[in-house]
Image (cartoon, rainbow over all chains, first blue to last red; front, side):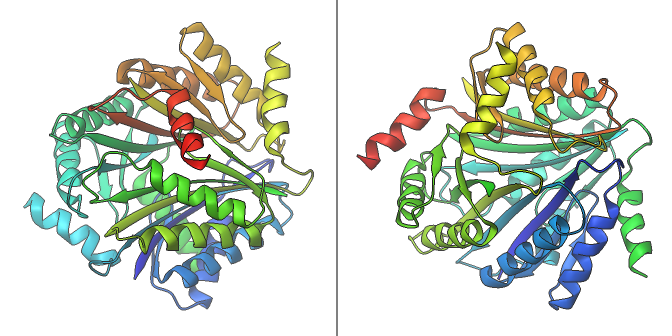
Length: 99
Length: 99
Length: 99
Length: 99
C-alpha cells in the first residue's frame, strides 16, 4: 500500500478558483473506490502503484478534456516495502510524538 | 493570507522513517504561533509570505543541522489577491460541492 | 505531446547520494525510446500521457525493487491542448525573451 | 552551496502561456547575481539558503503584484553537508555513469 498526493492546476481559465477541478478529481477517486483525504492543497489517496497511477491518469485526462487549454498535474508517490503506509497512521505517528 | 505546503526528506539516514523530522518541523511552526495542519504527506501552514518563508528556512536549517548529510525540502505556496486562503475553507468548498 | 518532470528519492539507504537511481531511471527512459533531458534536480521527458505514466511506473517500480525500503517519486505533468510542448521550445521561448 | 528548483504558475490569467512569468523570474535571479539554469519545466539556482529563499520571495512577490489574482510557486531545495552541490556536477555525474 502506497500513498499518492495529487494536485492539478488548470491554466488559461479566467478564474482564480479551481475547486471544481478538485471536485471532479474526487468523484473519479470515489468511482474507483479508493480511500482518500482532501487537504487544503491537494488530495491524498491510498492504493497500490497500478491503482494510483490509473487514477492519476483518469484525473489528468478528465481535466484536460474539460475545455481547459493547459493542465499541470503534480503527483507524489510515497511507498515503503518494510511496512504499509496509511492515511491515518502517517498523521497519528506525528500527533502521538507531539503529545 | 497564503497557504504553504511543506515536506522534507532526510537522505542518507539508515532509517526509512522520517516522522521525527516532521515532529521537529511542527514544533518550529508552533513556536512561531502559526496555524497548521499535519496531513499524511506534508504539513500545511497559514501565514503571509514573510512568515511562511521564515518558517520554511527554520525547518530546513533545523533538519540539515541535525546530523543528516542531505535534505530535500519541498515547498508550495498558494496565494490569492482576490481573497484570503484558509485551511478550513479550502476543504469546505470541495466537501460542500460533493454533497 | 506533454512534458513530465520526474525525480525520485530513495530513503534509508545510508548514502546521501542517489545518482545511481537517476542513472537507472534514464536507462528505462532510453529503453522506451523517449526524448529526455537530465537536469540538476530531475529528468524531463517528452511523450503522451500513456507513455509518460508507464515510464513513471517502470522507474518507481525499478527503484522500489532495488533493495530500498522507501521511495518518494515526484512527478509533474504539463500538457497543453492548444499546442505541442517540447523540451527545446520551452527553454528557447524564455531565452529569446531575455535577449 | 545548495540547489533550488523553482517554478510558478499564474492562475486565472486567460492565457495558457506563462513564459513571461519565467522571464521576469530570471531577471530577478540575474539581478541577484546567482548562477542558474532554465529547464523546460523550472529554473534551477545555486546559492546558500538565505540567497535562495530571498530570491524565491522576490520572484513570488513580483508575480503576485503583476496583476495576477493567484500564484502557486513550487520550490524544492536540495542541500548536502558532506559536499557542495553544483548545477554542472549533478548532471555530469549521471552522464558519466551512462557512458
